[in-house]
View 1 (cartoon, one colour):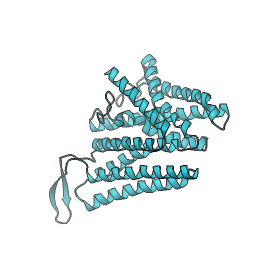
View 2: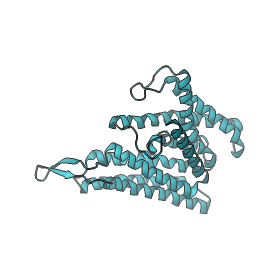
View 3: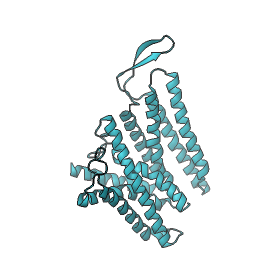
View 4: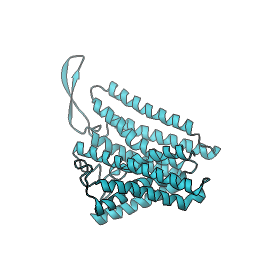
Length: 307
């Protein structure tokens, strides 16, 4: 299992580095596929995909109980979420092309359209709920929209970060924050971890490991900033400390993302979200921390560096 996990992790890291470095349509396509898979994993875990179980609903018109057999496969709620994901990434690609043609990334206009897409998905899923009533339960609608925001929208910040003026360098802070924190936390926890901080949710996590993960990610970010500062129109010390701060905050939220994904699995009684990645599970099992870290790195970049 260890070697399988290690080998899969190396391949996954190589793919991540290659696609992020290339950026453009390649990154958009990969993120779209990953988002669709992650969305499907979440909807299945949260119950938006009901399978072949009977749903009992109350017919208000006749005041009689009736049974509705939810068909197997992808539900209409999921289909709207997947269509919204394609539209959402299509918009990102459109604004990326516009930027290449004009030389300017109009982030304000782009964000407005992306927000409009998010609201549209919510309204369409509500419409499916209303017009198909009582086929779907309210919990399925909430799970469908939650999954859309959780996976596709949050993951898109990898590309939005890559599209910023210094994105080719800043985007790597997402991986340093999440995977760097995970590695450092594991190492410190194994060496000196004593105090269990989440005994019910994650028995193996220790306070010492969490602190080590945050400090380790901050140190990696600082060193990264020192080595690559020549590519930025800012001073050496400024960027190095900014990168350290971004990675430290990113590391904190990465652990929240990891624990949140674990909490969902425990609530739903499942071991993994999927079996796509040997030794790791599904997309949500491997990218649980990256998903939460990406928006933080993006916004911290906007606030601190302003590109």
